[in-house]
Image 1 (cartoon, helix red, strand yellow):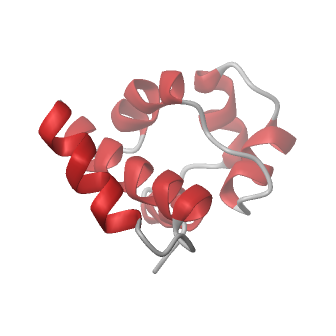
Image 2 (image 1 turned 45 degrees about the vertical axis):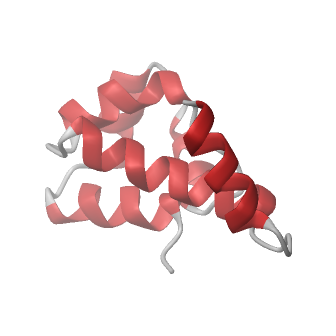
Length: 92
C-alpha cells in the first residue's frame, strides 16, 4: 500500500509541479509539504480541497485515499478493525 504522502508526491511529480508552488497554495512552508510527502507529518482534512484542485484529483478520490491511509496508520494493527468499521458504517 502506498502512503498518502507518496500518493500526493506522485501526483505532484506527474504534473511537474515544484513543492514550493504546492506549498504556497496550501499556505505552508515547503519543508512541511516535504514532511507530508515523506509521511513524517500528516496532511489535514482542510488541505484536501486545495490539494484536489492543485493536483487535479477528484475530491472524492483524494478523500478516500486520505481516509484509508489515516485509518490504516492509526488502527491498522487492531485485530477487530473491520468489525469496528462495520459498526461505524451502520451509525453513519
